[in-house]
Amino acid sequence: MPDLVVYLPDREWLVLMEAASSHGPVDTTRQGDLAALFAASTARLVYVSCFPDRAEFPKYVDKIAWESEVWCADHPTHMIHYNGERFLGPYG
Image (cartoon, rainbow, N blue to C red; front, top):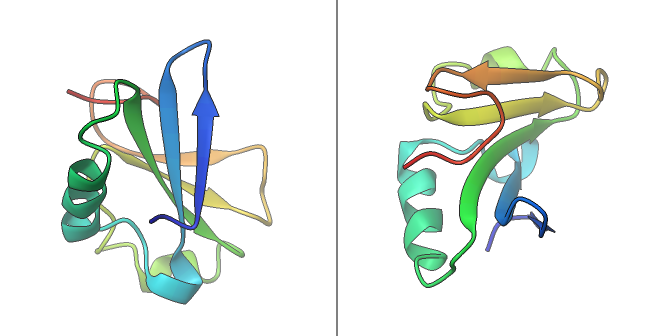
């Protein structure tokens, strides 16, 4: 299970958040594992790697999965988007 799951019923999204400093970020392998874990869900999945601060983020920058998001606690109103067709939303 991810560290935190948030359901947004108005959008039918499951936001799957991982504390990157404890278990690592949402990398390609973890993204696939979470997709399989939630395959029966009708909600669409959003993947977020969470960091305590931007100083921790560079240690994992090359491991973050495409089509996911990054959030840093020291800048809580901002997110970093890892490519894809949209910002903060499900893919596929």
